[in-house]
Image 1 (cartoon, rainbow, N blue to C red):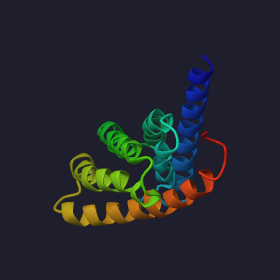
Image 2 (cartoon, rainbow, N blue to C red; image 1 turned 30 degrees about the horizontal axis):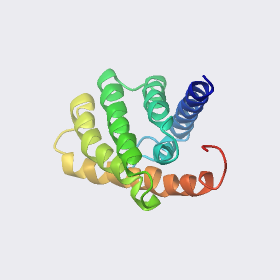
Image 3 (tube, helix red, strand yellow; image 1 turned 45 degrees about the vertical axis):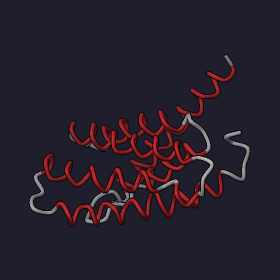
Length: 159
């Protein structure tokens, strides 16, 4: 029973952090524009430390997208892109920390441009959007994620 409670508590905490960071980035104007910095995407490295981060990030992404005004298909496919990313990170656990952000960067850079084109009507921009979403993910999941992982992995939070 203790392990289930611990898992649920970690998942809920990560989901809550994801929502708060999503809303903060939106309020600061970081999550809109050509290159989007979603602070919450830094949390996608956490499955390397705990499997509780998988549902935490996924649920947090759904709620964050809903609360920040995402359209239904954006909420669905944006959240699925993050789920694919965190599942990839989980599969890479135990390897180099530099690899942990790659699944999230790739899944978002490949899926989100199609969402932006089909949901928001951005035309003839797929390759440009792959580049700009990819840059945003490199900054968010990559740089911020590695900083977060480095800081958190030295603590007892996920042991």
